[in-house]
Image 1 (cartoon, rainbow, N blue to C red):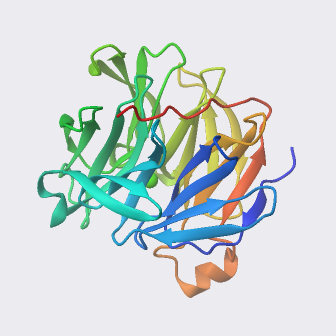
Image 2: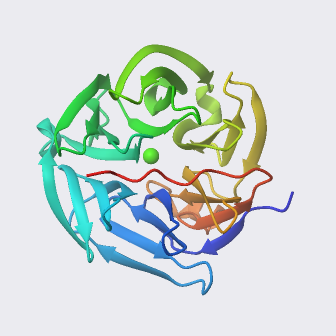
Length: 288
Ligand code: CA
């Protein structure tokens, strides 16, 4: 297996939220703290970015065009590079910020919060519906992170990084409600913290390991199947893209690394691409 290729030497502070925009064949991603939305063009290799004015944790595609985003204060629409806050969430403005998120099979956008000071249990997971109302789906979340759904739409996977694992929930696409929760993957702290994730066409989970320098693929039962090593330690998230959806794009971060550590991993904060032997799925569209 060839090593992942560095496609953008972006030196992002906290590269995150990769999203394949299949409408025009670009890979979108964010640099959270900087408040930047990047757009990488695989055909030219160019990477452009726009600043939306406040931290942006995740973005998703709207069915009507443009993007929906989890920005620091809540849910926003982004058009022509400008973010308009549509629904704010609780205490987010002062102590918390929005973090990772994704659209579910029925077109609702889920995203959660974390405390700026990492206070345990201070975050929540929210669901932003087509009627532009926000529902609190989980509370007492520490670092709300990766989320995705099984192909049959009956299971939701969710990462609260502080708990060191991936949980599965029964999920009802009709109502958007979640039920029985169980731990399916537990990662020893010394191996890294689970961060962003995606589910492929075989229903296996690809989980980025912050501090672990890799992306791991797990079966739905939690068995480790593949490890993709990266030349950077703070691997943040991954998403499939490309014409056949077999290019696994992986984001990374420089945040918190010392200058000595950066000598050892000069491409930290880069965007990488791994040729996978399995395909991913198209991202769901937010249906407002
Ligand atoms: Ca994350």
